[in-house]
Image (cartoon, rainbow, N blue to C red; front, side, top):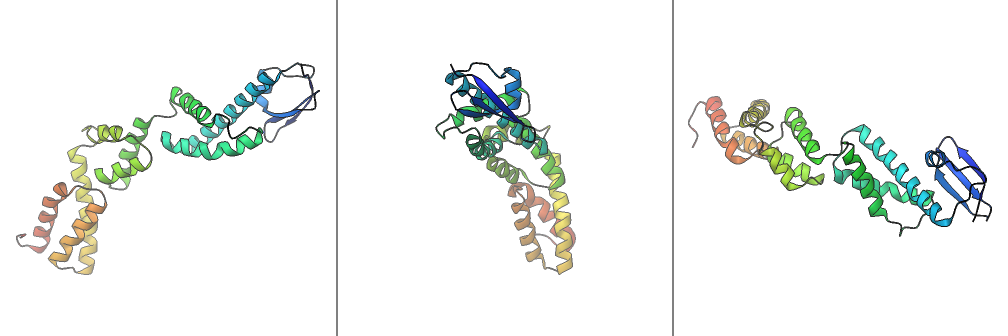
Length: 232
């Protein structure tokens, strides 16, 4: 059975270059080398090496996932996409074949992050909706579309948008009122007539994701108030 005859630690990358007496060399994660107590003279077979390469890849990928999530919260789909790009370079680093179980190891990392509560699509979507409603004045349709693009399951989105404690009628009405006020400033600055003013309000509110049934009466009320006449 091959023995370890030398290893070189690279502090900058936290990697170890492991040399065996059969002439083979391998790059392993330094933390793993320490945990497994791999030192000169230790015998190690090919199956164990493959196992350690897998574990090294897993550890590196998990660290990159933590770094990515430290910037801001992500959806499961966003993290999957990110890790799929990153794993290519790691496969080259550890000299592993593309046939290596890439999907399985990414899923293992994601499962571990879920277990540690770092990944939760429901909480991600809930926080996203609350922030977007507060800072961007977006309506339900726009929020749903944005979350679907981030890979959030439709059932999760529907569940949150139907939760009156998160998205209440009062909140939506308040957002519509704020949006109308902002759009109204533009309308007045351009001295638009009633028809063009109404068209702008409808167009811009719909583009922000508000439902027509929820904006129609508010637009009519604003037009009636500003132009002091009945709406046809």
